Image (cartoon, rainbow over all chains, first blue to last red; front, side, top):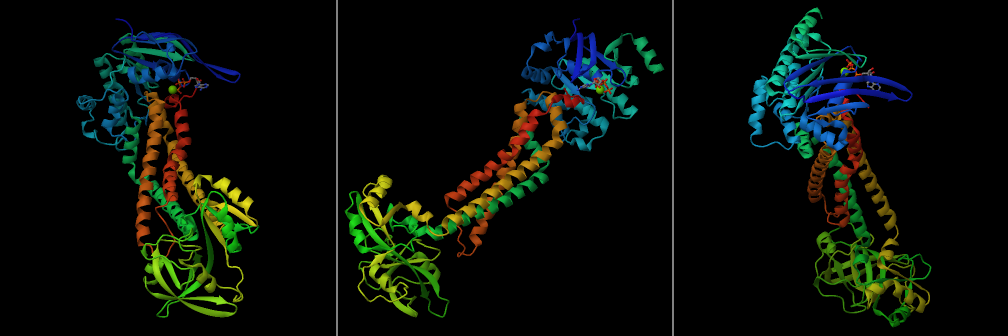
Length: 239
Length: 384
Ligand SMILES: Nc1ncnc2c1ncn2[C@@H]1O[C@H](COP(=O)(O)OP(=O)(O)OP(=O)(O)O)[C@@H](O)[C@H]1O
Ligand SMILES: [Mg+2]
């Protein structure tokens, strides 16, 4: 099966006057449909920078990112904006819902942005919310939700418009571990079911219980890519 | 899409937005009252002059176009009339007297305006008849006499003036009425020129048959478009006079320009405060929303969407506020006593409403700029 997402020796160098920071250094990997990847590494290792480049938010200094075979480098800013709302689903650390929209409206937002909102949308949104256990909270505003519920709404929003790639930057950082597990499991299940290319940045190795592949990054360089279940399990258990 | 976001945000935070709308409503009320007052005061000052059926006014030379100072002898009327292109000329004399009201009410100041029958300067009569002699003891009064003083057409009224050191009383019959014709804040009555000359206050009673003088001449032209050239012509052909058009005459009324510019300045600053209040409020609100805008951009909202959502919100809130303020002003204007010189149907009030509607978008421009400048990367905690 061909990859949905492909990074080809991607580098990002931040220039601040004279000083340069090589935040990501020649990273290459692929993500296939239905594959959920964990991106792990110490603080400052370049995980968020990597994610931003995969999400068409940041242009790599060197190398290419391809999604569905399209090279992000060939797009201008306007096309990148359109690409993001079309092909990418985002979940951020926390507080990334629109505070004045209800749960349902927050999820619908991606359909409206893409001009995909029609009479079937309501049903589609309701089904996804039900799947995420948010049925009763459909008409609540974000400030009436718990942290875990908010992240589940985010996940619904990142999937509703049928993107190719779903990305999450430490989606469980503000949750207690029980909630974190619950949310990550749901996320993994949906990525598997809907055959998305999923990638999640995390500090917490325990959250990798649900991933199919771990990319370890340190000082911007990929130190290992582990896609063997046994090895992953062993890694998680020894922390 | 931007509009959808704007409506949702305003609706879900309606308490806050109604509050700012109320502030705008207050500003609206203030601005409209100032505008109406400016219009009303202007009217009380110049109402008669602006309605005179003439294009040009003739003043004595070198009197700074002051009506009260200017003296034009009768002989000049014929000189002016002879100038090619002049259709009609009328002498106008201005004075102030007191109207003695029956049943012990306080006397009130009225403008005594001496005019020639059927000449420029004599306003059209609405009820009764016009004056048709040069010296009968009769007058046409403006409608305020009827409504405010309870005078009726056919009544005899008493006018008091000071001549020399003595108070003199004159009985005058009201033969007709005309529409609003205030001059220098006093209701006006129109009387035959010679009668006016007898009644008007003067230092010494002049029994001698000196030349009859008026303050100004009103000149109607055959071709009104020609007024600039004609003013020059008349001035060149007749000695000792200065000729200006109607607007210049009004502007030269003592205090008129100062008063209007004071009120216009007030209005301008009130509008400016409006712009700052709206701009400030939306700017603060926007600064709080920057993380959200980052997220919206990250998930693919275009700059157009963001800009529309910001500006649509501002327009909704401003329009609502202006509407509310106008309604309140309208209500107040109905219950206010009649004596207050406010006029709400003038063009200045209309312009004020347009200006008020514009302050929202103007005040919001900075916010829009800031919103467009927000980087989607901040959603991930990065910056470029
Ligand atoms: N705008 C920038 N200018 C300069 N250096 C930057 C900029 N943004 C990030 N960096 C640097 O790039 C490196 C990678 O940062 P990044 O945020 O991608 O790391 P991270 O792995 O996500 O860290 P964390 O786990 O703390 O979120 C860090 O050394 C950081 O200081
Ligand atoms: Mg990070």
